[in-house]
Image (cartoon, rainbow, N blue to C red; front, top):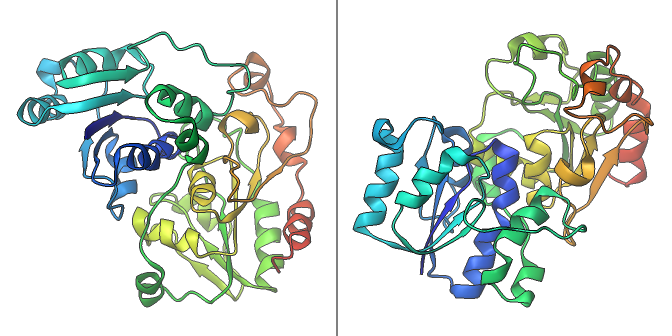
Length: 333
């Protein structure tokens, strides 16, 4: 069984779709070959994952087939080794020409069929699962959740000076570098307060992306017992670091999704975005704490209300003490 999966979104979007990997392996056998078409950065999610055979990078999604060497590489490979199944998770019409050109015996998913999602299918993970529901058994469907494989614990501890217990702070998010107001962000002052409080009880590990020095410099100097890993790990190692952590604290961003997919307890500070749709996914195997200031106007993401918001009160009114006490009440300190 050879399968091609198309999912070309941000990191969190790709994490949502990973429930399909175990579903296919359980339904069709462990020797099922699974290839992905992903954005280049997000695709490194599978560098340490032996369940995924190959990743085709697709940087520019809207470039026509005849001008895209990356799209032509996918098509050429499918002609040489045809797929038994193509699963498309992308709803954008720019993917239709690629989907039509790929050689596969069967094609399912967005743009290929009319999908009427039930009212209780709300979270993006459940939407992703529903797309492939018809090709697997109910038993397998019930057992399928996002799951990631990163660097193993032994190699992680050889490279990085981690204590046996540590809590990860991931204060940045994907909107940090964009030239607009970051509605998902928590203010610097409570991040500093929380880092100081937690570091008195346990090792704190700070993670983030490269080229975000301006943001992280505002949180420094860090107190003792803080390990700065910002831009110092690849994605496979970052997954391993997160998997072995006591907990992770973040806003609504990719690292929160990584934590939920490796069953590390996650504390997500969420204001304008709908936690039940795009927040870290709750499964029978993990613990997800959504921390909110419970504003009547939230969620408001991508609405006129958000665009006209000048104060970002939903995030401002989450206090560092509120977050600290939530972690403490979970018996993690």
